Image (cartoon, rainbow, N blue to C red; front, side, top):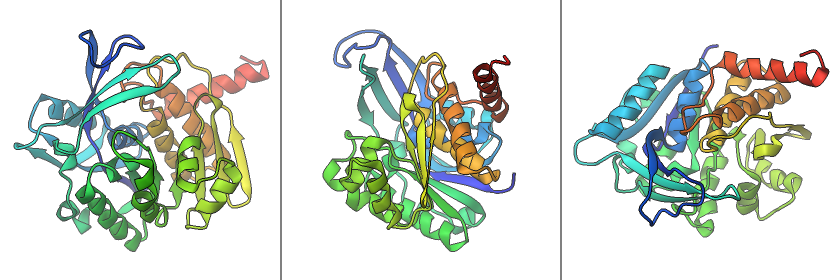
Length: 321
C-alpha cells in the first residue's frame, strides 16, 4: 500500500489507578507508565497495521520520553520529527475508570513538552508526500500555538494533494463545549474523513438525530463520517449511504485507545481500496482488539490479527467454525 499517514499531535504517558472506581485524589496503587496520547495511539496503530507512519510532536529528554520514542521505533513509526526537549518534561495523564464506563483525567499537557508544538515546527518538506494527515481534537485543544501548527500542516497537506482525517476526541478537561465549534470547525471544513462519537457529533451540531447531525457536517465539506459507537460498533455515512456495522465480541481489559485504533483501522481500509462497510468492519476489529490488553497502545493489532478476528467471527456466525 502506497502513501504516508502523518500526524501532528499529543504524546504523553498514562498512569492509571489499578482498581475501577478508585479516586485519583487518594493514596493507592497505580499502573504504568504506558505510552499514550490520542495522536500517539493512532499513529502507532497505523504503523502496526503496515502503513508508513510519520509523527510530528515533542517529548521531554527523560525516561517517559524514551518510553514513547522506543515504542514508536519498535513499531515502525518515523520519529525523526519528534522534538526531544531539555526544558520541558514529557506529558502525563493520570486516569481512573468508573463502573459506568466513564473516566476521569488529570492532565499535565499544556506546559509539558507535548504542548510545545509551534507553527515553525511544521516543515513543508515533511508534509509534501503525505496521503493523509490525521488531527485529533485533543491536540487542537492543548493551546493556541499547537492549534496553529495543526492548521499550518493541514494547509500544506491539502495544498500537496493529500487528505485530512479528524477525530474530535473532545476532552472536557482541555476544552469547554462553548469553545469546540470555534476550535474544530476550521479542521472539519478541510477534512475528508470525520470520526466523532454520538456525543461529540451532538455537541458539534446541536443535533441528537444522527442523520440530521451528519447532514450539517456534510455541508462543511467532509466526504465520510464514521460514528464510533463503542460496544454497538459503528455507523458510517457517505452521501446518501448509511452503513451500520456491529462490534466484535472480545473480553475488555482497558478501553483506552479503542477509538484511536478504530480511526487507524478505517483509514487503513480506505487506503487499501475497501468500501466503507469493509473499512468499518476492519476498524471495528482493530478497535476491539485494542481493548484486550492493559495500556492504550498494548492491544493495537497487526493487520493479520485484525483479519483473523474478522474471519473467525464470520465462521462462528455462519456455523462453520
